[in-house]
Length: 190
Image (cartoon, rainbow, N blue to C red; front, top):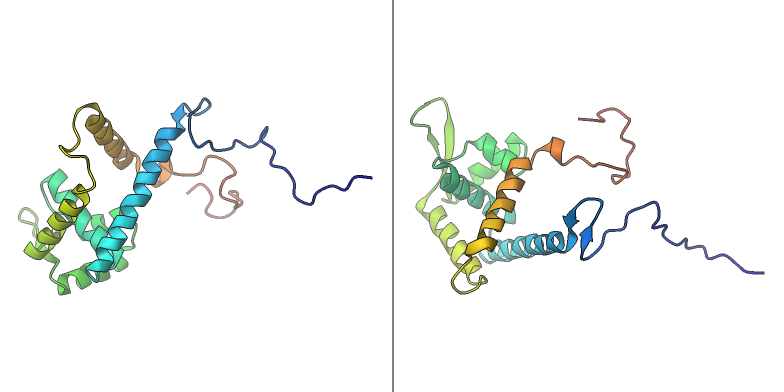
């Protein structure tokens, strides 16, 4: 008589198993590239956590400075507090507390919009710009000499633009039985 193991083998015929490299023919995605991008994301987050801790900042404080500076660089204007909240996935009240804390530390300041005095924008102070510049210099130390150029730089810019453009809740919803929750209850499909 044979005894059956209490551990059931994973059935790969019904459940797709993520691959570490190669191309997933069903999705048309090069999983090696996706894995490399995810590894880069994890490394960048870890760098930011170390960088923030070395300056007695919380990582969300550093991310707020980065969001404000990058928005100014790409849009040629400073963001509103609600945009900062959205980019950091915070409620407006949490973002208000964060902005108040960073204003008290001298990294940010609130200013009225020149064109619409009803709007408040969040600006980096000189200290905030210096922190962002130092962050970029230190992060740049990990890049290849000569920087990024050519097709790879274009590809990286396209990936970044695609993620920013598609970073909406409706495009990031699970597409299968991946959540472990019943998607038919109250609030389903939001």
